[in-house]
Image (tube, rainbow, N blue to C red):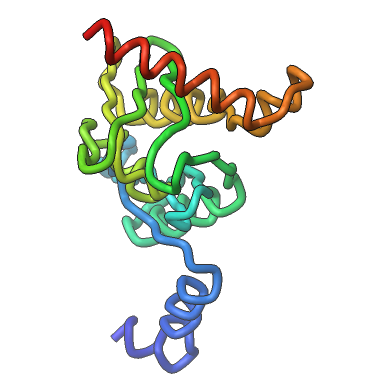
Length: 193
């Protein structure tokens, strides 16, 4: 009945149109049910953690709380859309370099991977990589396995990600010179191994 009422008002259509218009993909990472004890019994509420991204380098996460699950997810999705960040990807498929991140007791290590590796990561981190558009990465989390801490630690690591262009600009050299150094170190590493 409520669904029919929403469709008459056009709410269902607007939600689908928003997803197509801005091209964002959202993934529900975690739902937590909390209970508040009141005089008549327990009142249940829900907290949702959602990750949103365009699979081309933009990603954000949001947290929403409400008495009903769909409303909590909607609030979390709106919060995630407001907090989008840009992540520089190499060849549009992996990270430029290995990076560490932490939040609270949660620590993560993200490593760039060759083509065909896939996403080797645990639940909450996998959702972040799928929405940002990373196809090849190896990730490991240490410490807290709380999904909130893992997602925030992953975002901390992604914010510390530098592209060769920004590194070259900071050092005052050309990108080609920086890439040449990278190729030299790759050749040395393969000769030793």
